[in-house]
Image (tube, each protein chain N blue to C red):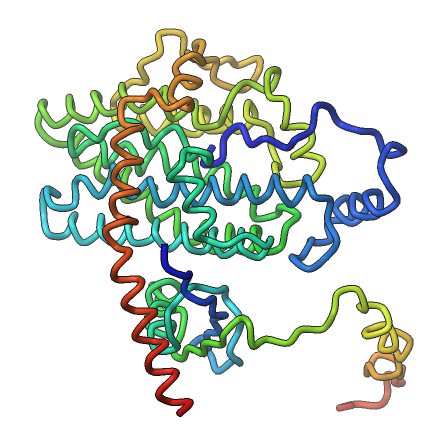
Length: 94
Length: 328
């Protein structure tokens, strides 16, 4: 058995002008084949108009163990949301 | 189901105070419907059970291409041929989504495939039955894919993120499979007497194996309780089987064909159909490798893998050569 084809993460942009979204992964020998395989595996029903492929090994992720120090600071800053500021009913268009 | 009789390693369900603090926290997340993601802490048995379940599911999709692929060259029209090819291609896609989900648990696809080829990993018993006539393609779509949908819709809510996301994709595509099968059955049943007899014959042969897909009765299923607690099995074998019978019998009535079960009858008190006993010895025998096509199916898979090895190696060598040239 030869060595396994590397794993690629696949991102697809749908037709509605949204950003590329992660849809899954697949194996391919190189980037060109990864794009071709991604077309067959992830866009058989017009799911996309653009494909990005990234080698899984190249993705750097935040550590799940550090979830709290990483994300907790945001939860105490409720004033970042517009609903923090009650507006009087008489004030319109704001 | 597509994953039948998955071993959880559990002899019995442990109570909450028998769990370690980590396990308790893990169970609390599952109880709160928070998805478990690949890099999160998880009990080793959960990880191993999921690898078994998801890979068995993936293998079923891939082996399931064989009985249907058998009829691609002999489909009765160009339209049916194009539809069947699209359906079989979808099964390949479903297998790939699932292998990817399993790989997030730290196992490689080649290892999983090696386990299938050595006989260590299983696939659904249903694919060890032969497709003798064109009507079998109708019966598979209608019954086998119908049973698969029954099982997969609840799995969209399962606790493991990548598995749940793969199931959502699969379910979106699967209903085409069931409908194209029913459409074949409908065409045959509206055709000549011979065509209708062919549809009835396919139903006779596929009905009981379809009911076996849901796995052994709950009373004898030792691993179900653990899998249910981990939310990787959402409904019991018997519940799913009953739902399947209830939904399918009226469809057969519409087609004007009959399930091969003299005891099948509506029970108004239960609000369900009663059905006759299932031959569990047949299921165990097929799972052990003694179904009509077990050897043929595995031989076809191993042959495809071995004969494709040079293509995989050549593609990799080509990619490495180009990468080296680019680096120089």
